[in-house]
Image (tube, rainbow, N blue to C red):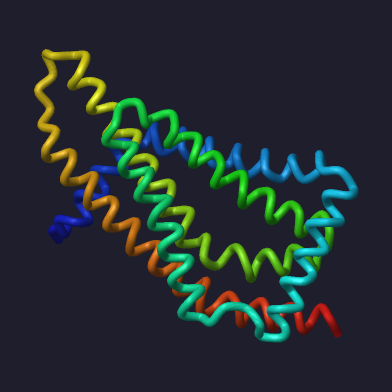
Length: 214
């Protein structure tokens, strides 16, 4: 049975960039771990201030005072679109390569800090809250960030080879087309993430917070 063109292109992409994927995933995980460690470096006053705002937000969720689902969808979609769009643009620039890696590390750090803080302050209840409020949309967002960051690094390296190794005649136009398609795939992922964050996560959070308040 013949493989479909998209499936063949995807397999080829993962094979060609397997080492970059490994590096990017490790960097992201390092960001998550670092974010969790940062929680322990906060002073008691800082933790109390953050927990105060967190409790107020949970109260708003229970009272249904948060933004509407459509507004949350739009905010999530356009926020992540700008973030991923910036990574995509950086991939076209040779000097943008290290910034892409920094942004990926920061993304992991934010997730690690958020989950770490919730668990640190609320223990098992915090894990349950983080599981329903952070994990669902990040099942779409994390693959999008890793795939696009890998494609961005790979495309930047191709530009570097073209610039400094004149003997190499790799067609940049074909690589740019594949790179652009990767951005389209990432947009599909963040659409799924925004849908979950806007329409699913608030309901899950309200259910969990109601159970915790009992």
